[in-house]
Length: 380
Image 1 (spheres, rainbow, N blue to C red):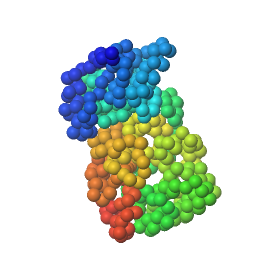
Image 2: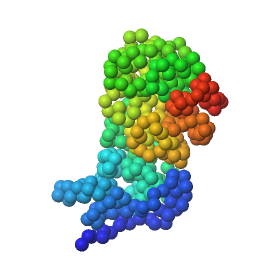
Image 3: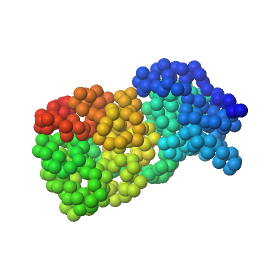
Image 4: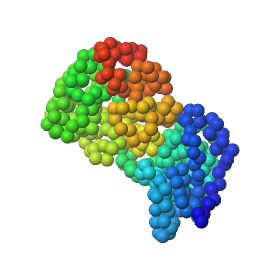
């Protein structure tokens, strides 16, 4: 016989209020989420179950619950007190995050915390982002959290120690304008004369010689122009070419995805004087990247896109708006990414970002100069 489990104490009125006020903004899942204290969790767990562990369980218990959580593709959140802060470890099918946040009380998982956590999960936020929202929520507040200081710091997978902030990268202006992400140097050579304010070479190849040649061509096209050129992924080639040109290469910066950050030499990029932009897809990733003080953050994917396989579902305008409100005071240069085109550009810019990235709006245009002129005009 399967043990039914006993749910964690939750402020039901607060949960219902949050769902009523934010479901239209973020969307919501139909299947309900269930949050259980470790001692009362059911034997069989599923994809909409969260187990809360207060403190460090004995090894045998820890091994058992980890196995049960993994088998059911459930979520496990372990919380320990360290001075005046909570250290939360979130295990989910999307990986493991360790987050560090200020403690507002002595209870790791009080009824209000459980209400916000469950609401955030029900509003389509992944477990690590839901934890960030629950810890950032001010006691007694009814407003969606936007105070950066209340949000957790990332301990794992941290890019720098939370206690030792990194020096900032060279800044970008808040308004990078139309940002064209292009697959080849041919496209960069086409767009620079059309005065696209920001361009990115996103050339995918394992051929080192081909990469080097594409970067050199793109840099030559941008040198002396009004276009800011970013090189996607190939940071070492960009740094070497920039140095070989005496710092006057035509390359303005480097763009990295989350998967590239752990392997890149961030100190070398910073020392080169090149800017650094990073793609993010939610709260935990934004907090992780903010610690290295990049030149800009790209936020998305806002809308469905076919140009790459995304690690998360489209964020939608509700999440995009909440991300901009949180991050703009911290990193003023923000770029909206993912499925942006002439039809939705004004909606994206209306949220308050100074740039939006496009791909197919240019590469699939029948008349590229006309498409660029029309997109540029949307920025006023």
